[in-house]
Image (cartoon, rainbow over all chains, first blue to last red; front, side, top):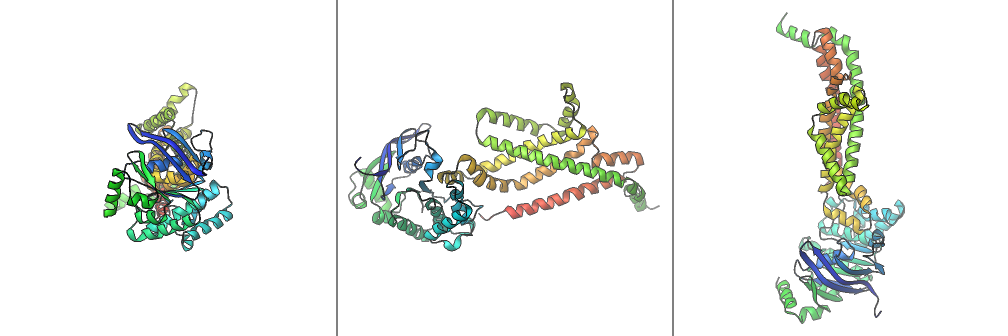
Length: 247
Length: 226
């Protein structure tokens, strides 16, 4: 055991019918590390992320998160998922609940907190994402950026050991992206382990510890952001980064 | 006697109406009893079936779909007659009241199951994923996240169906249930005058108009901004 890796995924394969989406992916993430996963659409990066908390069932391989074997049938998956926060492209807030209701549901139902305690933790989480004054708003009354920050609060309220971000800013208007990245940056500063699938190259450049480039179901190369962006070793990486940076 | 007077004397005959008012009122009580029983058991069973169906147990789902299709396809009158006149041959005898209740509850169960199911499946997959990713179980997600959204979507079609099927209590006349229409038509033949039928119509309005208004309020109350 050389390093303490909080996420250790090995030889992950995923088939959707005849489609072979992940073709043997290994991914280790150290505690407090921020790993950026990039790659063309259809490269399997979102599927990889969704395998880590078993929203997708990998066809084969092993996944250990914070010492818990995620693929062991004896693992209490609901308990394990509390420790793995996930933020989605389309926010997926519960539209029939207030922001506070969204944040406190799992605290009450899964973590077993009383309503008063859950509300206290919920307010604290909303405060961390800068939305203390929006607790009683419903998702429909919030902007996209605010909704995504509530979604982040919903995850961090459970004090996860690792956070997964699946294209968190892709559905946002450009002027709202900054507020979400700001929250992600402060999470990073607090020492949260994060795996981020995103095209925010600027953010990757100055916040990521490591950039992983995926293509066609495999990790093609990985390294420090400067290394990957300035001196990619593979043609496919170079082509992809060239395309992204032209915009 | 003018035409108008004759019309009023025929359809809104005060004497006849006064005489048969108590019958119509007791018919209303029977109709209300039937309606309440049908709505509670029919919607309850429909929701239960939809929840069971969401567990995605194949053979069970085939059975549910078959049952639901059967009771949606059969005319309610046929079901009433089958239960009332047919089941005694299997040593099961139900009164007209119970036969009508069971039949219409089964029909409402079938239609409402489809509506509840459509509501559950129309909730976006991301809602399930968000909830499951925070550690809520399948059942907790269904009850706390999916069902509350599904129910809001189902209120308009559900109230329409419920009202349509509950009005079917009038079919109970066929098996001698003394509900509104039964009372009205026997009063009509006893008095040789259709005024009791008008009272029956008024009774249905008095019963169902508030339900329609209430349904509209519910729809407004549970609508939320997306």
